[in-house]
Image 1 (cartoon, rainbow, N blue to C red):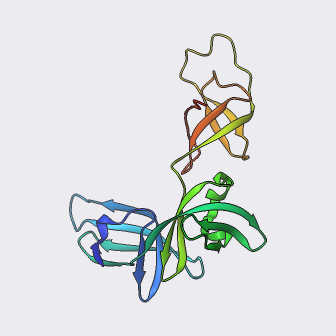
Image 2 (cartoon, one colour):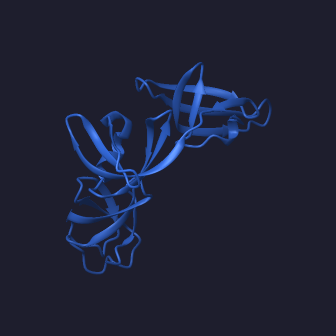
Amino acid sequence: MRVIASSLRKGNIVEVDGDLFVVLNAESFHPGKGTPTTQVDMRRIRDGVKTAQRYKTTEQVERAHVEDREFQYLYNDADGYHFMNSETYDQVSLPADLIGDQAVYLEPEMKVKLAIHEGVPVSIELPQRATLEVVETEPTVRGQTASSSYKPAVLSNGVRTMVPPHIATGTRIVVMTADGAYVERAKD
């Protein structure tokens, strides 16, 4: 299926010269003079090589046909990360480089979406938010809670993030899986 370059988004799978690429970032530029362009950073799926491509925004790009299926995360070992299809109970294994830095947010039984192209998983999409516990942070300074300053904290998965001053060690918080940013205190 052909689409214009400006419609590409992170996570899309495109086919360029017979190879499949996953889009890491797509940014459109509209200069005052000249042709608007779209800069696309992508990673080749078969070997993980990153590349950048620039297209005119109206240029056609071949978007690969992929099926999004829901899988459940099971565990990881030396062979990779293992997932199970919730409907058919089929299991697939993904290499660590395909998951990348999102691996720290994977928890057993977490539901994820895998993009399948011709029977092979090519990309993973985690839930947008994850609930984690703060294991280390500075103590709250009295009188500082009214300001909008943030303090560093370490979460139960080892990720460092910035949290509001009222968050203490042991508090469960919700963070964005894309960048680890604090969203809110967990309601559970």
